[in-house]
Length: 638
Image (cartoon, rainbow, N blue to C red):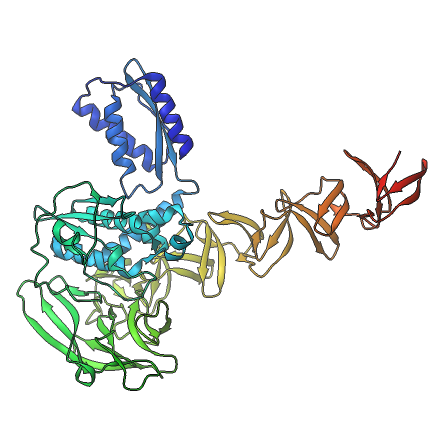
């Protein structure tokens, strides 16, 4: 990036600053062309046929570089002549590929699923806030260590890797809001070394700091709402401690600061439809504490206690001590609401108005301090006190009551015209139809005009990401679709595997590269237990725990001898002396010549080698085909 910016400065100094006028239609054409060039990762854009001013270029490029959706675009350079810009050169984040962008787009679509049809702007801002706080962890360890990777500052870090710092949270929030038609800007403070978001609702601006509503280190299932929709005055007070921000856009309204239901909630606020939402509230104290699941109507304001339990959290191994408050999570899964007390997890079914205990923890290592869900399972967090920075997640063994995992379940088998075959939308889901009848027994892959899809028991498995086998191979499924554009490593419960064009490459043995280095693949699987030499078309390489050890220079041993490694590669073209922590060794064709005893030459003289090692302990006479020679401390003395 520094190189690109230096080039940009040099070009500006060389050609001066343009000030020509620019027609609106031509400006729009330029905006469209520049955005398309960045989206397709073009290296250059020729503007020779346009009359483009430098001011317009700066404005448009600034907007594109600030667009959180274009996380791969870093900088640009411009060429000018005759008072106009004639060419742009683009610089992109190193290592980002079209496959990464496709995964990013899919992650954005997945996040937007929390916005239900019919939601207004306020509801949208709330559920997106909760989604990010639930699914993103602050990059705490890298922050403390001063090693924050670039992607943690981007929406990609937040939405794909699930790890980000404040800028990544804010950029992801801005992107999701923009997809829903809500204006926002990035707010930053140099004095705080921090950034957040200002959003516009109903013509008024408000501060939202998703980062500070998500604890660091991360606490799964915890979502605060203390920094949601605040005014300038409130966010800068002694309780909220924000200062020194820019730009100053004026967040003067405080209508969402008093009496809002989310004020004291530390759990997410799930919606089962655009008008029905849920929250957990605690009342009473100690043995009289009640944890209540509250059902609310957004439009009508009605509130009803759907279910309640009595419990409190004792201080671990301190009889008589207890913590003030309730520490329960709230997860919507399989069309049911899950929450907890200190040892039990409950499931409330709105359709049946019933409450069931679905899991009881034995209490051996602590108590349950919240729940979290990833769309396919629900897990409880076990800790010994609420202030413990880390805990243990226990997956709860659950059988879906509604197989569509939260979507509509057909009340009766749907019937279509006998000519209908393939995936058909039915209610809120897609089902597999054969000759007009729903085939609820089918599990496998099917194809339509948009690709290949994974079907589970007759339903599109849009919730599934992983490997799936059929008679033609093993395939990588991402959100229910065969990712036939993807080549790279994917992780499963059984290790990492190499996928090529969406298919498990079980025929492949060799090295492959991703953003984190080169890796040794054996029959399609990452050989992370392997350390040794491997052969490729480009030579022999040293692999350590499955990864190419391009940081290593030294000697390594296998069944065929000792070998000289330089930057991870076998130096089979090298013959000469080589230094290690254990002395100097004579290398012949990349191998330690342990069979050799005699004199060898390098730039510093002749040396006596004994069984492959420099004999710097030897002084005396040695013989070769040219006679006898005197050696002192391993070096020949003329």
